[in-house]
Image (cartoon, rainbow, N blue to C red; front, side, top):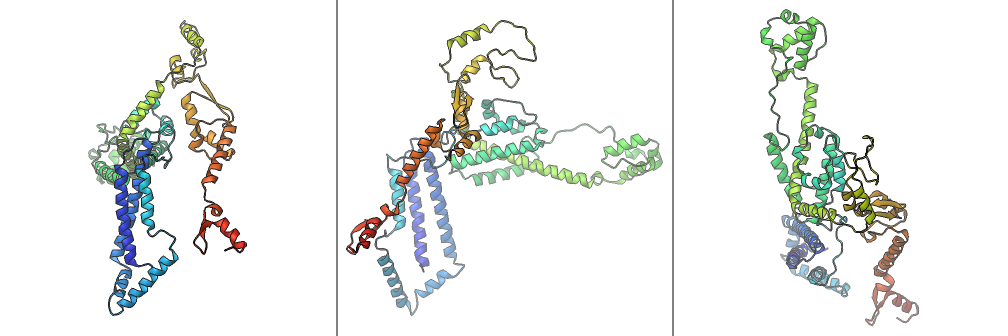
Length: 496
């Protein structure tokens, strides 16, 4: 059984080595985005390991099980020498049985880690998965969330660039739009993406603590009715159907108003409006002596409470998005610049005759207004009219890309072509080929090329994988180190 004191010493050593490795990693200059993100991921892993060792130490020092006290008593008192020699014998037996293993596995592990970090010629691998649009954490990829946004009911359709600038201005969205369940689904999708992006691109940000602080701020503002976009509306209108009951002293006075007028007065107070003339008058006269809160129907009150909880949940999600958008502010600006740069990128593959034809389309031609004039077959914009020809060429929509893996599907424009590699059609085609849709196969559209690359990757993995017959080493009686296959051959021949 391992000594509790030795375990404590090991946990202290692990904490110190974690701190040393964190300092070494942070002192190394990061030249690329991949190096920076991978370094943050390594530091996060070391911090979690440091915290785990700390928790074990705290539990050991509290000694709720009494194990530490029992061991301390065993190493003191009249039988101390017997315990000492028993422990010395156990240590010798351990080192005798593990003489070919490293004496300190922890030191060896951290030594290899530090050598890799401080090596200027190290090759960084992809520690976390990013899409092509994200550029290994440089940019945001909100295309999927943008599609959900433009399909919300009552939302003005905007382009992707405008959405990047305004996706956190949720307080400007009408409250009628926020009533629908699709809006809550949109907020959930946006929150999930931002949280997932933060965990991949900025792992050192304590997102749980940030959200905890944000929720406290929200609860304070919600109690004061100051949550952005949820301020109470000032209402100065008075229900014209309501009656001033102080002017009526008996049920007979109310009966003189008639059935229709009593019905409108009861509806104004959210009371039951059916029955005979006398029943309505008695019900309305009974409401004269009741407080306004007593007139509220219990069922309606429960519905109002449920609606209030729904508003609270939606408002809290919005407030979290405000904070998350603030945390990815730099990446948001970089994404906007990157999108503008891609949109401004020109193409010279067009035929000059197309430009001449575009110039000729300036004459006024009579045509049916229900069918827009579109001789060149340009895509339609959000208003149902063909987009400008210069915009059509600017986005490269005149360039067609065919993907054999997607069933010879044709994609118009480089942006749509690059995005389709992470969409369902291409992923389904890769699954049909029994090939994982990993970044290794980016920009590959031919089935033969994908199969050839997959075969090459499998051969490479087999080459670097562990082979016991070739990689496992054995030692004979004379101390010679040989492979396992050679050792078994010599053993069968009786040469050992």
